[in-house]
Length: 57
Image (cartoon, rainbow, N blue to C red; front, side, top):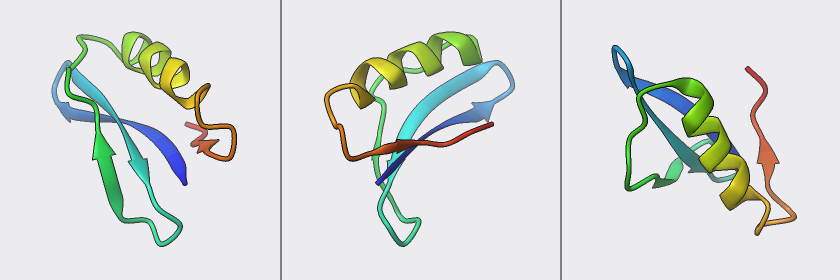
C-alpha cells in the first residue's frame, strides 16, 4: 500500500491510497486548497497504517 497526494484540478488537492499493483483503492473525502494541507492530512491517516508507504514527490 502506498499513500499519495494528487492535484485534482488547479489549486484542488486530495490524498489517496494505492494497492501493491498501483490501483487506487481509497481517496480522501475532502479536498484541500494546497498540497501542504493535503499532505498533512495524508500523513495523519498514514500514521494509523504502519505497513503503508508514503510516495515521495
